[in-house]
Amino acid sequence: MNRFLVLVAVLLGGCAQQALRGTGDLGVVVERAAGRIVVVDGSARAALGTVDGLGDLSHASVVFSRDARYAFVFGRDGGITKVDLLRQRIERRVVQAGNSIGGAISQDGRLVVAQNYEPGGIKVFDSQSLELLADIPATYGEVGLRSKVVGLVDLPGNRFAYALFDAGEIWVADLSVPAHPHVTKFKNVGNQPYDGLVTPDGRYYLAGLFGEDGIALVDLWRPEQGARKILANYGRGEEKLPVFKMPHLRGWAVAGQRAYLPAVGRHEVLVVDTATWEEVGRIPVRGQPVFVIARPDGRQVWVNFAFPDNGWVQVIDTLDNRLIDTLAPGKAVLHLEFTPKGEQVWISARDDNRVLVYDTRTRKPVGELRAESPSGIFFTARAARIGF
Amino acid sequence: MRAFCLLLCLSMAIDAAAEAAAAPTPERRLELVRLVRQDCGSCHGMTLKGGLGLPLLPDNLRDKPAASLVATVVHGRPGTPMPAWKTILAEGEAEWIVAQLLTGFPGE
Image (cartoon, rainbow over all chains, first blue to last red; front, side, top):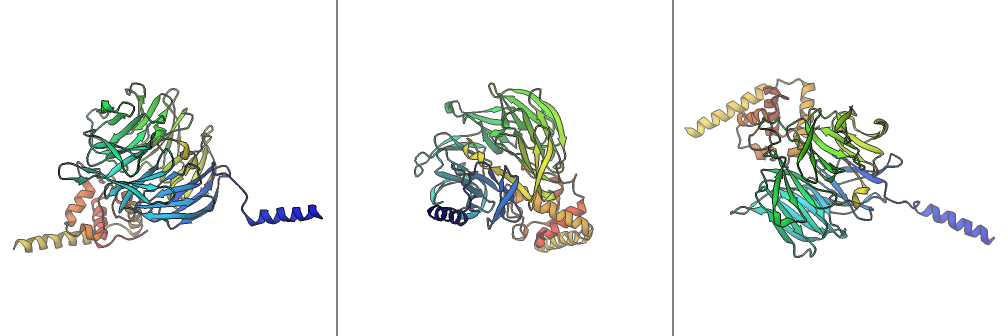
């Protein structure tokens, strides 16, 4: 009799709550036009649910809490929405600027920082409450103009690095005491930095330049040396092609001892040695690269392209820097994201309203999900990576 | 007199844009709407409220002559990230897009 009661109690308990599960293989897919995200299970290759009401997601990016339970979604309209991935519901939401481009989360997970175009600057929030802790305007020049902020990344020591598009500067904000930020400015780093990345060890910050050929580099372990330029004049004075979409940079550029970087206005991927930061090669590709992303083990680099070549994806073998595949996954490929150990890559094809899943060894599709105008794909493994 | 000339020029430019508005076929117009919302949208925002590029709502464009807006689309703006779209868009298509932007751009 007693045993029967225990059995009933266990069964009832099981019905009352969802089965326990982790979040390590979860992710989100942004449905840009609908202001909605799809919470996905990367192992089952299936949607778990959707969360809407996230505002204008035309340039959305996502970071994760360090327990990988919550996604912070940064929208174009300045909205930051904290989403519970397990319950698939909005936990908190603030609209903190008029025009925003993305965000980052601190090393200790306690600070969420938004990078804003309008008004130009960064804002720092408590990741629990989304309460504003600090506001750092990107003011430059003698009359105090505000610059658009790009390329925000988290650094060790609860610091953040970012670039000022209009000012041509790189700033490093130390937020170890959030109410009293300490900002180090690197001026005249180059013309129109458009995005930035930090190497996976947190040592080098790179800002890609749009207004000139080259990349600004700061050794964050030796900031007294200032910023310097690498890959200067990589266009060799040739006129660049019209750029219909800005490339994007992240720490995924680094594969082993080399970094693979998009050439702006050229059909090339540039290869640099991360020990010397000298160019060691360039790989001709199908169009102007937008995302140049190394598989987590670094053996392959996958590349997508700007309009009008955005139906292609190409794969580079990093052993000999040779193209090994050209794929046509669908119409308007906007983004790609590897599973945490890289056996699969998820590719969003906006105009086909689907996300394709490819096996990276065979480079054949192994599945797909429906999604409305999908753009960014973000797996929770980013929670544990510096610069993501 | 100068104001009159300016008005005349402006109305001629708008007329020109309106005339060319008949140029793209209905199917092509759908493609152009998608192109503007999605691809121009990567810098100007899908809602055209701006981003790295300037906002393109009627209020933002009202003071600018249509002809110069068409020229910006076709030839780009040197020194800024705005590219020349002439390899993608015919002049008449650029004129149609500008006319739509000035009156409130259609949704998809």
